[in-house]
Length: 189
Image (cartoon, rainbow, N blue to C red; front, side, top):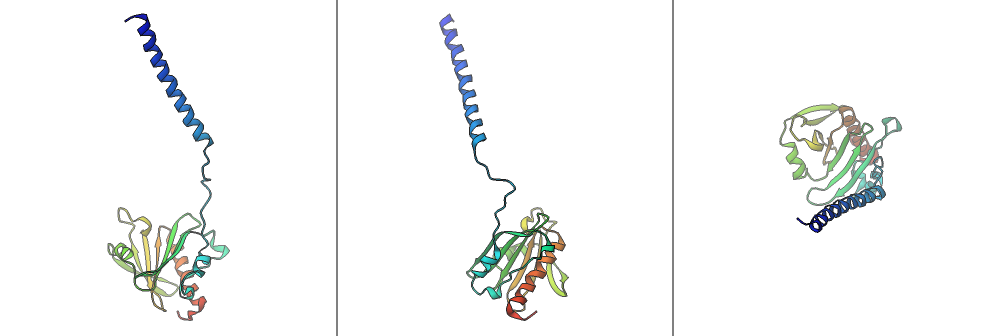
């Protein structure tokens, strides 16, 4: 190989290394100046506002937590009309657990019913009312349906409380949800 060819080969290697270092430097600059969301921020939704905008809000649960209950907040709240209308609130607990409220006014949706088919039910009493409890924690992938509590509401419809939180948080949500329906004017319970 001639000295000119050796010089060109070395130059190609140096050019390649320089381009690689330049590319890595560019990526580093982009990463350093990129605006990233604050990991401690949370996308809170005021479920009371969404509740008041639903059809017939007086028939739908709207739990109110006391200051002594801790810092509860919602990451989702919506009303889905259709064949199985559903009022849904997704709550983050003070211990960072998750509790969802599903209220169906015309039977449970097929998606939720399917989740309840894979385990047996047992009774649980909360504030002198018997709920049906589905413990899915032994399943390989229970997701946000690790525990599910279900009750038929006095005014009709079905209330389901599901999630990953501990039992005391489930019982608190269940109690407050039922109490909110009574307070809003059904007078039954």
